[in-house]
Image (cartoon, rainbow, N blue to C red):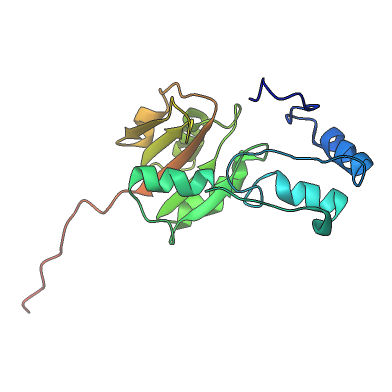
Length: 181
C-alpha cells in the first residue's frame, strides 16, 4: 500500500504469530507501526497484539470501523444491531443472532462470504432478511449493493473485502382489525 516507503514491511495475512513476534522482538529497538483498516480493537488486530505484547506497549489510533461505515452507507442505525464475525470463525456464530436480532452486521471472509451466509441462514429457516453488501469501504472502488432477500443473495458474486448487513423484513400482514365484540 505504500510503495514509496523505505520502511521494512511485513504484510499481515494469516501470519499473526509472526507479526506479533516481530513487534515483540523489536520493541524499544525500532519504531514500529502496524497499519490496519478501521478500528483495530473492534474485531481487528489490536486485541491480538495487546494479548501478545501487552496493551501498555500499544498506541491505538482508530479510524471509523468497517461496521460503522457499512451502516452509514446503508443509511441504517446500528445501536440495535447484533454484530457478529465469521471472519476466520465458524459460520455457526450467526445461528443465535440470526434467530433473535432484527438487524445483523456481519464481518465476512473468503469462505464465509455473503452468498454462503445467505445459504446457511436459509437452511436454518432464517431467510426473512433483506441484505446490504458493502464492498471495499473507504476505497475508490467502494460499492453498496442491496438485495431484497436472502434468496437473491445466494446467487451474488461479491468482492472479498466486504461487510454484510441483514435487516429483518417487517411483517407483511399490516395492522390487525380490532374485534368489535
